[in-house]
Length: 173
Image 1 (cartoon, helix red, strand yellow):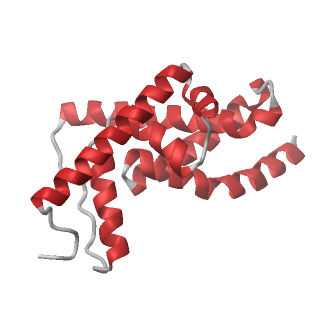
Image 2 (image 1 turned 30 degrees about the vertical axis):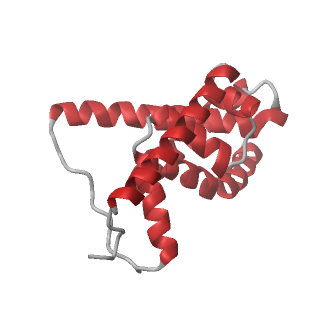
């Protein structure tokens, strides 16, 4: 048992940065991303004996992460219903073009539904295939393809709208 714990600790250390990054893109909140990644590792440790196909560990772990993110969104929605509170503001940073472009993309991603954003992150950030996304989210492959298509349409429209209106980028006033 101690060897299993050590092996899992090594594995967790290797996947944690990727889990935090993925959750951050889905949830758009660094603290929530840390919480979701930690919750994913706790659930993975608890549910590991039920993993039937060890060669599918990554897909299984992504599915656990997606569920942890969805649970966080549900909790956040309930909390907002109880008490209205503002989102934490992002700190001002460099006005470099790279950061401005990233902010513009984050704004566009924020306009997507959680399901669409999840599909985009799994596809374009983690590079998962449609079948892998379907497995990770528990959705039919047709739903995955549809969500990705709609998400890309919405992203393109949001970026075009921001360009037309001249939405100010972070660091420029």
